[in-house]
Image 1: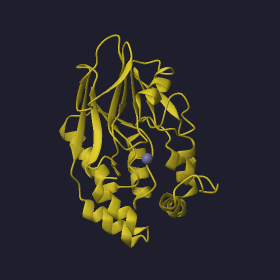
Image 2: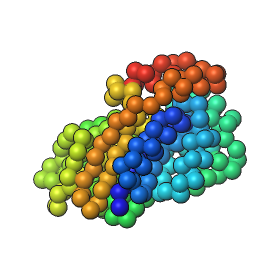
Image 3: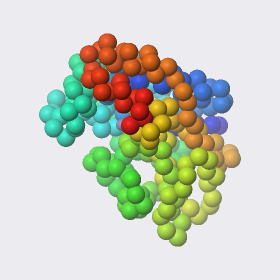
Image 4: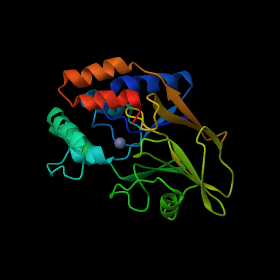
Length: 240
Ligand code: ZN
């Protein structure tokens, strides 16, 4: 049994395909999605339908929530707001019903998944520091939880205190809790444009972080062709 943990796909089909291909090559048997299938990039329908067809556990992201509502978009920055409106126009009512029904957090086998934080999963806070992670750990009833939302791969451990470690390769140890961000498939923000996800192998108790090149030019061309803000295409290459 081997899990691919991926999230913040953000309608980037080229990046999603590269991740799924890499997962297959690494003998992944199960898939888990951390939310934000849509928003920012040009393939919301294709990404939603592809992940939905995989029938894997998935949680709701803030862009998934916004895409199926009719509320005003003042909470979002102008670029995100324009992309959300465009996304709303692409999705059918049936797509929106499916997104709406997603849960904020889920238990998968013996680990938890959430898009933002466990202490307040519907408020879309960001876990950026040891303090943020501490708040979330208080509500974490499993040894391991995967999250997304920041688009930056990070790993926090709680033993006698909460501290951050490099996410590259982690071996879980008894008596410790782990809060792991697998980064973003479709819009990384750690100055590295490559798609990010993680492979969790329960039998070995390891989490392996992965980065992959993908056909970014095609993804950028689709953004421009769709009439989405050019900035969204440029930021993909900058990894922010
Ligand atoms: Zn996101």
